Amino acid sequence: MKSTLPLVILLGAVSFSLVGCTFPSSRRTVPIGQANVLQRAELGTVTSVREVNIEGQKGQLGLYGGGLVGAAAASGGRGVGGAVVQATGAVVGAVAGQAVEEVATRKRAQEISIRLDDGNTVTVTQEVSTGLFMDGDRVRVINGGGHARVAMATN
Image 1: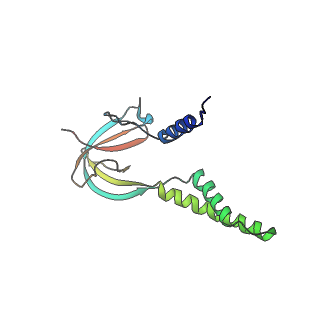
Image 2: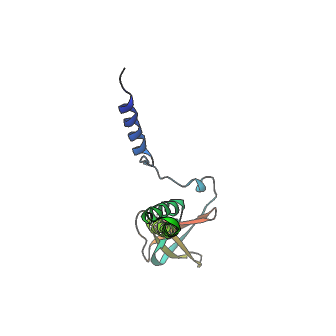
Image 3: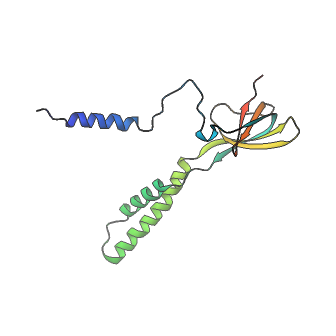
């Protein structure tokens, strides 16, 4: 009887490598929150653009990961003093871990001010995905479902 361990390891490695993968599509993918939502489009001209960052996440990964690393780094002492040092290391590690996670998950964005054709001015901040907007660009502002986005106007 042959060992199935190599097969199990291979399947585990393949499964692990596929986690988080997305497969490319020729069609544009929209967030689920935009499906079945009435959206209004208005035309306008970009009047100013400012580069900004969208704040990153401060989640459990940074908190617990940093706490564990901090506690491990501060371990080694004995008695009450060692426990206090280890607890302090865990707290400092948790704070530092969340800060690192926030910086690592920040997104590059643009704050885009647009003078709409009706004379009103609106500002939309959105993540930079493809292409950058510049002063004078003719754009569509798509607004609906509590969200807005800017796209290049099509003729």
